Structure formats: C-alpha cells, structure tokens
Amino acid sequence: MAASVLVFEAFIALFFGLVAAKLHPSDDWLVAVVLGGLCVLLSGLMRYRWAYTLGWILQAGFIAAGFLVTDMFVLGVVFTAVWWAGLHYGEKAERIKAGLVAAHEARAAADEGAREHGEGAAAGTSTDRPGVKTR
Image 1 (tube, rainbow, N blue to C red):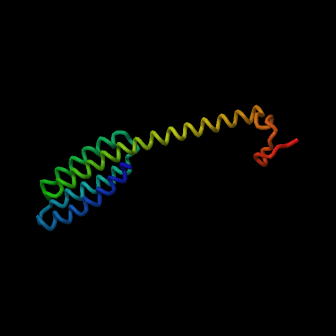
Image 2: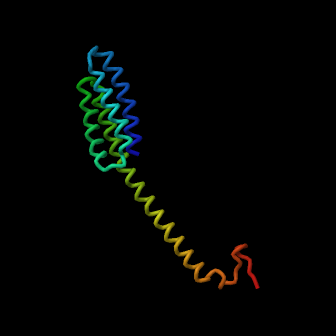
Image 3: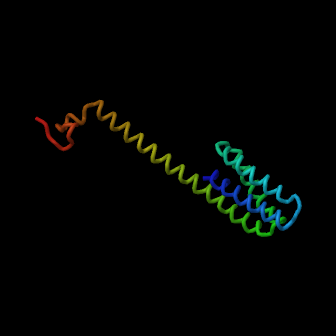
C-alpha cells in the first residue's frame, strides 16, 4: 500500500514541477524532479525496513516544497496523512491475512490428520459422494 502512495506522490511532484516552472522561471522545478524520482525509486524498495523511514523523510520534503509553491503545504500534509493511513491499514491488513492463512493451514493439517487415521471412512460415508451412506 505504501508503494502505491509513493507512485501517486510522484504524479503530484510532476504537477508541482509544472506549476513551479510556470510561476518561477528558475530551477525550482528540479526539486519536483528529485521528489518524483525519489518516490518512484523508493516505491520499488518498500521490501526493506529502512525504506519506510526514508518515506517519512520524503513526506517532509513534500511539505517543505510549500516554500516554493504554497499549495504544496496543503498537499504535503494531505499526502503525509495518506502515507500514515497506508502504513497503518496496510499493516492491519497484513495481520488479518496472516491470521487467515494460519487458520487455513491449521484446518488443512487437521483434515489431513483425520484422513490419515481413517476417520472419514469409519463414519460409513463415501468420500466420492458426500452424504451418501455405503454398506
């Protein structure tokens, strides 16, 4: 989820660069190129723990870009909130997913153990057609 937020921020950086180039005919647009490039690069490195720390630093960079284009103060704060939500709810979803996988594996192991001990055949039911009694 964090990588998705960073990719969206790369687009915002692109638009920020266009606005900065139009408002201030200087090299301010280079800040946008650097921010956007870092977003794309960092989105591919989210498998490393330290990348999340760099993501927070990048959020501060987006807020600081407000000194060049004042609207970036608001957008920086909004995307910092989205970054936090992505991290928070992404972690929550991973915990739920891990619990579901563990429950599924436990159920599969219990079913396998029951099959090994012949508990299904002992009840007198056919495994080919559930609910049909065999003699």
